[in-house]
Amino acid sequence: MYNAKSLKAEEFISDEEIRETLAYADANKDNVALIDEIIEKAKLRKGLNHREASVLLACEIPEKIQEVYALAEQIKKDFYGNRIVLFAPLYLSNYCVNGCVYCPYHLKNKHIARKKLTQEDIVKEVTALQDMGHKRLAIEAGEDPVNNPIEYILECIKTIYSIKHKNGAIRRVNVNIAATTVENYRKLKEAGIGTYILFQETYHKESYEKLHPTGPKHDYAYHTEAMDRAMEGGIDDVGLGVLFGLDLYRYEFAGLLMHAEHLEAVHGVGPHTISVPRIKHADDIDPSAFDNGISDDTFAKICALIRVSVPYTGMIISTRESQEVRNKVLPLGVSQISGASKTSVGGYAEPEKEGEVTSEQFDVSDQRTLDEVVNWLIKLGYIPSFCTACYREGRTGDRFMALCKNMQILNCCHPNALMTLKEYLEDYASEETKRLGMELIDRELEKIPNPKVKQTAYEHIHDIAEGKRDFRF
Figure 1: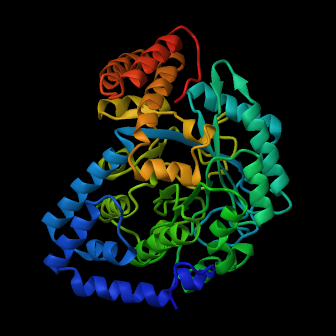
Figure 2: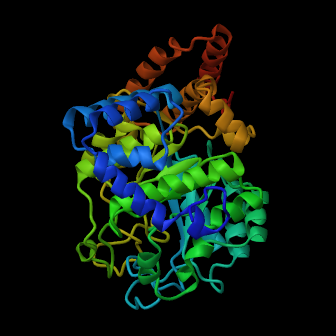
């Protein structure tokens, strides 16, 4: 039986409830009166439940879809302004004991190059990332209790935070590792992580067990209940996601929203982020072998509906997606993107050569440099942000959500974004990007409504030009 407050995976992600929801959505996909009612509710900026959102996802009426797109764009601006936060993944190790059939790290893949970074390697990788201008990382590692125990992950986090190179510093480390124990989540919290990220891959239990035939990840309940253990361990910023293409997208969409509703119901704090990766080509993996792939138009519709359904969440699009697709979905609610990503182990300091046995997790579609991505965002009218202030000021969990849901977070985020962009322009940008960025900063400073905040931001921007760093509201 469906129960959003239950701590049992099969009760807060109820197969019966999802199937009833999809049937309800099919029955009402042309019900204009109901669709209008749901859109009006979405305009209140309080979100939609999984059943309401599923009706909109099933709806194929062009003008109604356009209404949703316009609303998604406005809601994103209301909550997060025109900022786009930038980050990079850092792959620590691709040793893995699981048998996931869609991932090249699976145990039976004998021709991928297995690698694990030493602490000296991490210094090289992080230095290379700092030389690009990155301030925020998401660390990734396969599940392997021998090669990648929690002690290794903790040591890596400590090393990353310790590296100060020129004006560079990694100010926030998000962690994407396998489901683990409350005790280990507590250790991650004590290590100073930002967000704990874990993709469900698929919410369909039967498919999940087939896709994860061997290894600890085979346990659907243990994996699905991981966020509750993370919250119990003190981690109050968690990130959800499914891998679209593994199962039917409407089922996954409903399950994803139900998981968000569950976190709200039990912990009072929904997901800090939601990621929307699609399965991509990788060593030993052919995405066409999975017959649930989604079109770019469907992908865009999912992004827009996540934004209107979970208005407070940060939505992440990675370099799995091409520049063209990112162009398409940026206006529909995306607030974070990766830039100049490498999905190989050690790929920043020593990029893999063509023909070399790869250690990549998947092919990267957007191959641009970070400067090219920053330049592109500025030209589109966005503020590329390297801000990590909320995490460092303790604005996490319910504190962050309270500010965000009241649309007050902008008072901090807007000037913080401008100051971190100014740091990037001074330390790393090409001449053209620096010129365009300074013009953007001058325009955006004038939009700060609070005179005191505006004056302080002006002063900090000047101080950054004089060589000072790391100001935040």
